[in-house]
Length: 571
Image 1 (cartoon, helix red, strand yellow):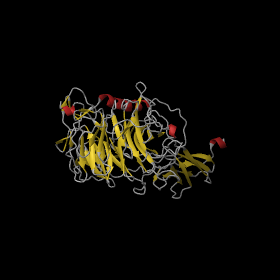
Image 2 (image 1 turned 90 degrees about the horizontal axis):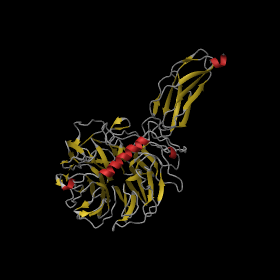
Image 3 (image 1 turned 30 degrees about the horizontal axis):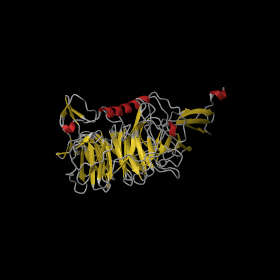
Image 4 (image 1 turned 135 degrees about the vertical axis):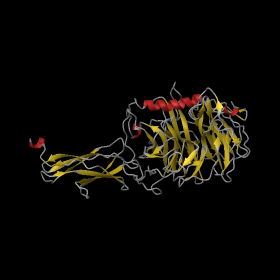
């Protein structure tokens, strides 16, 4: 086995993360929520004053991949995607479409159009033999033959001059690159200096003006001990003395806004030997621990633990997402002061979080949330009800908790043979367009693989109607001259307010109109008594439902009912 492939993955943390996803999903089938419902914030694409407006739940035309996308980064009007795929294709087309383009685990797209750019670098691996299965992130290419070449993190330099990416690969454009590489975004050329020899997977990257910080599962870089954290000089590619140590997987890195601290997230119980469970901060120059005043992630308790999967810094705040192993452990989202480590808020939804993005005062996230009752959302059901894309307020509003917002786009878990069955794994945004990536193959019920994107209604008008099915109304006798008409409300994925119009027979003017706030876990039965009818006449009804932008869905016609005196009145 080549030395560069001696440790394609760390079985322990990967297995724990996989088990955490599976255990959380299993717990969803048996855990009954006992927390009281709180009012849901009526925030959506037409929110009340003082509440941030979400992007719409209508996915925009976007090129697709033929495999999983693990990471996204945005720079200068371009989104870069890294993962495990070998082609990209237009929206609405199937894998193998004649118009597809070859892209080996790395691709770039115009943020505003979803179209690919000419950016094209082949990121590949070297097959090797082993009786040990390296895990689902690698491909089986024969009996005990494996190919590990995925990109797990892409990160653009803050000045937009370069792109850095890390993972399992061994070559870029045919040139040796051991799990980390850089590309100039001005010339498109592979960085000839960034050639470290890394003996394990790179999962996290942070980039300053002078330095590339990396985290992952490795224990050596250029033959020197580096325990899951290391730093390289951007100009020369030289390994720097910076050498903090984590005792388990590092999944994500972020720089504080002033560049003085590196925030580290992952599955580790200790950072530099201190009990900085799953998240902590080290000095960007020395690697020494810096002040961290709180523990947003609880310490491991036997087989139960939480780990940090994603970190995003906005001003003085670092926002994070967590995954958990064991029923009921924390696996939601949180906000922490980057300078003090003081926790600002933690949400209480259950269901492992894989990615987050912050835009317009909102934290968007990908997860398999299955119980948000403590935030005014839905309770545990059996079988579980999952929402894989969520939105919540980024500002806690002082002492108050952050609020769940009404934004529930539909994405599936991925192909039938998906190992994780998680759906979304990555997000990126330019403060207008929100990109989402992962292993999904459908968005909004339509075929769309690996990539999708959303935008506010000012850019991409809200055009989808409330949800189907929307059943026919049922009429029953109320008196010898009236019928009571009842129907079950439906809901809209990005608006709480839904307006219902009731029509009699083939009439085109509604005989009744009402507006109610609905969501997928609170669907009331609505009714109206139609009076002044002629005894012995027959009538049938239908209902139209509309969101605030007049996107409508019509029910079927109900059965005709003859007006007569009800037996319980006329008996």
